[in-house]
Image 1: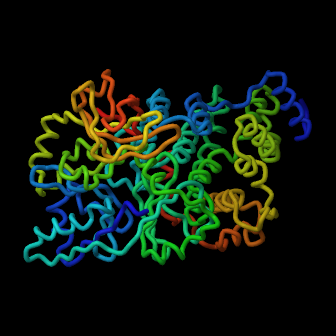
Image 2: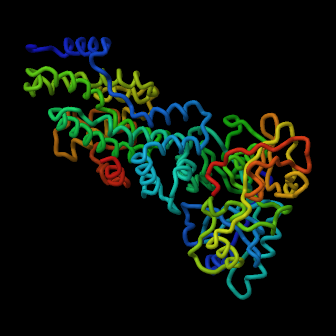
Image 3: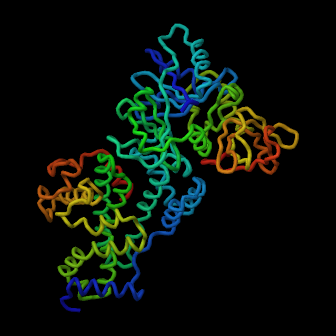
Length: 290
Length: 276
């Protein structure tokens, strides 16, 4: 998949360093368990969200490819004298969905779990039907899977399944705009509220304890519409009420995730500024938005 | 009824079933709904969660399972939708069926209670060992093996219900035990057909006592798992095995030798506790 990249945070102080920079608890990530999280700016806005895993005493962050270099650069500014290395790797990502072919080992069966099969990390993505995110060197991924057994699909197909499970990916167009709760990262287990301080934590925690999340991530369907680019505005009448985070073509239209004002999502007719002739229909997420 | 042969009894039981005078065990409502919804392929995670939520006890136990060490939860799973997303549809369907199965083993007469309780206890033990064995076998599913264990002796239930109506038989322990032993695979297969369970499970129920069987493609299957688990269960109870374990093919197909201590595989106690 070309829209995801893998960044590596290594060095003796990697865990302590990350603990001060990301929303999830690094100590709950281990060789067998991955998790979701985000890097935020001091205002608590998400610069990028990621799936994090541990490998060879380093951490790997899977994040939007168009942000990876910027995030590495951003994090380097906080390293100071700590023993931490930061780099975007050459690793590639591959998504696999459906019933599996015979493998030398059983791939993980529970959401977030990781099993290494050869030199490829198999991460079970939480979803109702089995799918796995595979990480590895491009050559290993190509060698490790026989194309005859699987049908290839474009990256947008994988994105559609992320949209249906309510999993957002912040990209360059939406970086630095939303609190992690607005992206439902709290509902996805991507924020720890008892891990201590990290960049942006004060605002994120205050929003949480005051229960004042006024915008949330919702899923929509637009019949007949083309996928709008991330950042496209959603309007109710003339008023801007939200923004597209991710979109993908679906049968007879487009499915998308958008951060929308909670008071505008019920009742009002929402439209995309990119395709005002196609009204948006709200669709269920895989979890309940409070 | 004097000295009834198993064949006569089986014929009689089938007749009673056909005439609706004896009903086969039924799956609890929630399990039926969840199975239909998953197989229909249309239900969303929240619809499935709503269905499960109708049975509060079952919901609580599903959350308990999802948070158990068997599924290594990183963060606490506090609602059904989270559990469904983490475990996936197939696992949830199988777990709900398994959790609901205990209700099938609730007898309506005191006479049957001891029998039902013993069968359930054996089934849970065999199920726990089966699940652990399946986790060691890449192409077999752990929850499917668990469910196979829970139902492998289900055919005994209608036999007991009919025997309960026959004072002579109910008092003749030896005759009853013989009927149970010989007939439960066939009756069990009948129940699973009635429930529309997959062939792999029906095969387990009908074939697990055929010790000399070969698996169709020479690879380990669920019947092998149950055979090994059943023998391990007997061994752990200090009971004599009905067959010499070194002579059956199931062990080698699973890559095991009959003298290994299967009971030490991780997760057996956890599974036992959940279903006990």
